[in-house]
Amino acid sequence: MKRNASAREKVREDLECLTAELIGMGLADDQNFPAIKQVGSDLWEVSFRGAEHISIAMGDSDYDIIYKELLDNRSFSLKLVDGGMLQLSYRFEAESLIKHRLAFYPSPSLRPFQDDPELYMREELYVEIVSRRLVPFPLRFDYDLKATKDVAHPSCHLTLGDVEGCRIPVFCPLTPRQFVEFVVRNFYQTERHDFISKLPGHRHYFDVSISPNEQRLIHMAVPGAT
Image (cartoon, rainbow, N blue to C red):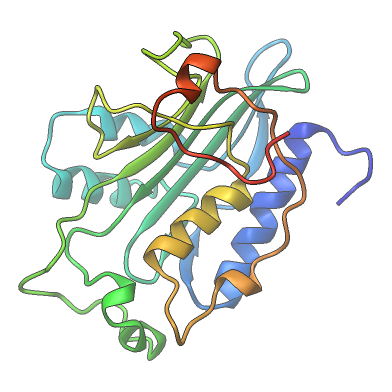
């Protein structure tokens, strides 16, 4: 990474490197590489082609319909081998991060990777499953300085299942490396397939954003936060 790279360039390079590594490991089979776009006089976004369709996920449709529409519109940064989709978007004002949206949408119709990793590593990628032990639901890490309200709306929080009132405080904004590791470790890592050790190292971190009141609640810690 360039020594004097801007904050947004660091995020783009981080995500670009992660994308290439996940493809090389065989864990991702489709992608929209990240790009930096100016969206205001001093506003910049690091996002992906198809991000304009993420509002689909905010509708009242059943999850399988939302997933299919996102997939059909290629609204993802990465599609993993079991159909799980990752969306990573960041917004900066000058050099300061002011917003991010990091989402994971598991496939509603394919077996999760951890259930049968050898199936996917044999490249049998699209096997339909009649019954499932798990009910798939999305998860999302949001960071939004402008929407922050102490405790009621933590600046950085985790939402499970797109439930409107679910905002679990998070210690600080997540880098692409931290978010990808969270998803891979909890949904793809197995005893035989160690993907975490093959990921690029951490290159940067964001500052702590959690408030003292939010720290008194159950919250998520983020290693390396400064």
